Image (cartoon, rainbow, N blue to C red; front, side):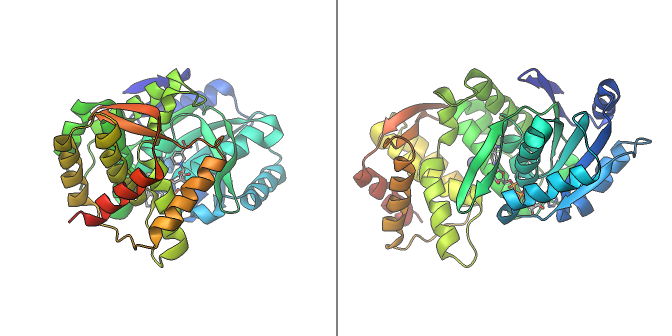
Amino acid sequence: MEISSNGKPIYFNLGFNPLLNLIEKNNYSQVFVLVDEHTSELCLPILRDGLGDFQNYSIIETQAGEQHKTIDFCIGIWNTLLDFNADRKSLLINLGGGVVTDMGGFIAATFKRGIDFVNIPTTLLSQVDASVGGKTGIDLDENKNMIGTFSIPEAVFIESEFLETLPKREILSGFAEIIKHGLIADDVLFDQILNSNLESIHPDLIIKSVTIKNKIVEHDPKEKGLRKILNFGHTIGHAIETYSLQNDPQPLNHGEAIVVGMLCEAYISTVVNKLTPEELNIIVDFLLKIYPKYSLEENAFDQILLTLAYDKKNENHQLMFSLLNRIGDCDFNINVSNELIIESLNFYQDLK
Ligand SMILES: NC(=O)c1ccc[n+]([C@@H]2O[C@H](COP(=O)([O-])OP(=O)(O)OC[C@H]3O[C@@H](n4cnc5c(N)ncnc54)[C@H](O)[C@@H]3O)[C@@H](O)[C@H]2O)c1
Ligand SMILES: [Zn+2]
């Protein structure tokens, strides 16, 4: 299976022959593979096998984790590319989760004003979300994804085999984005999600999820309108993620925070948009069955509102929500009062 994204292919479970063809066709002067210490051990052997006789590439290893998605690590990698005499006809292959594909994409987009890159996402989250849509970037101190570009990889390779070594918690984090894609755009996919086996994510769920995101971002590449629906669950979700990072010894990961955000924003959707209480119940029952309930302390509310107000300051003083119209349809640019945000946090808090 193959789809086109901004004119470039996304391959699903087709192996790496198309990558060999791409390398041959473009006659790259050098090929580099960017990995982190986990994908070096767990994913590189799969790529190596897939490339058969072609083993003429250099490995660049970075450290795993969001805290390393910074300019300092980019400088290290740019310098390594220079040490290898990389020129503008080089190819960078990003083999890893969203940290590697985001940072590798940014490094490639800026090195000598831009070299080609390919993404091979190895986490569920990066397969269904980070690898599609052309956003690359790094963090600036506490501010996530502050510096970056819109740059399209020459190709994306989504291979289910990589997910076999991914810890369950990481699978669930990516699964939250698949759920989001169903909720905002496809009720049939959502039904399929309700009946899915979490022990082994069906490739069909991944393909449908990527196709939904791809359609949305092709329609609105620079997030002027429709692309905002991808933010469903993310307005409150990000504030909760920030709160958890600052306060919990074992913070929520992105997907877990987004699940709390989706529950709050689904509740808000029943108050100011057309989601029905029955639909809300279906969403609540399903999400609480698979994700642990997060305990929101009372004093968390103030901090969450402060984070939301800070985000608002950064977005023209307008904090706009994307809210469900029904399961499978979402509106954007809806203003929500602080009182209703607090009501939604209380709603979450009271869920059993
Ligand atoms: N560009 C976008 O549109 C976009 C969209 C969503 C998220 N993101 C970014 O993606 C990042 C999060 O991505 P992520 O969740 O993939 O995080 P990640 O890259 O940190 O990967 C999570 C962990 O899994 C490990 N790992 C990767 N592949 C593995 C495998 N096959 N088996 C075992 N372990 C493996 C990694 O080494 C890491 O420790 C964030 O920085 C976020 O900002 C970007
Ligand atoms: Zn997300």
